[in-house]
Image (cartoon, rainbow, N blue to C red):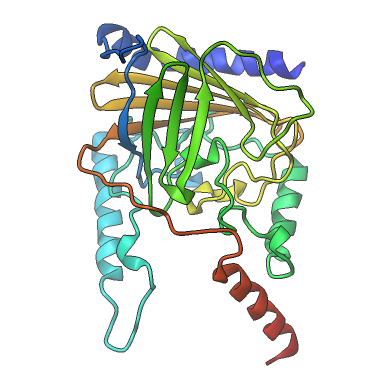
Length: 321
């Protein structure tokens, strides 16, 4: 099936699956910016203990009951308490104090962030599995096999919108003709034109692609093409099986930002890359407004000492010194 047709079918299915959110959006009228856009501005967070993919023990269970959600949250809280402060003489993790992977399941009580396919699993091609295993096996050989997140280049699009172990905040700023999303992780600003301009020529490619946005009612839809083949679709600890899967130049992403009340945006992303996945797949994550959250500079840059340390450690392991 032609890629654009495949993607259109999945986006339509995702829209049907999100009738509840759309209905709420229709009942609630968001305020407008001075130039008339639905106002999404503010700081939003998405930290959660809900995994990207549905755990095998939940199989065909798409939603948790209220009691099941509470039990998982108690289990996560108990695990954090067991970790606790370092024992005497144990320095612990240097950055343990700013880990913030969330305390609750997503407000929808879904069992995974992947909502399509229905089994909540990313539809990897064998080529994607092979690429992931190869990157993991050779991580210590060269920086080229390391995560572009670890190298502090980018978490990618839409990987930058996936929850991680910390820095799960996003600041949205709107101006006439543009929407800007500032990612706390790796301090990336993503500038999205919404003035109707066409995509750049296909020969012009970049790490995070070429985004073009437009409004459908209160929903901001962002269509991104023109990716290069250097990034990874997702690189956070929450990414599960897709950590290490490279993106290709055929990657096409459609995102939907739908405000459903004054403090919640339903974020959806449909990812299509026929070279890596057997079909398009969709992620849905609630974004919650946090008026008290402060975004500080994320002090990470390409060439950081951690990369050098990993490679030096691998060479020392080879020589036994």
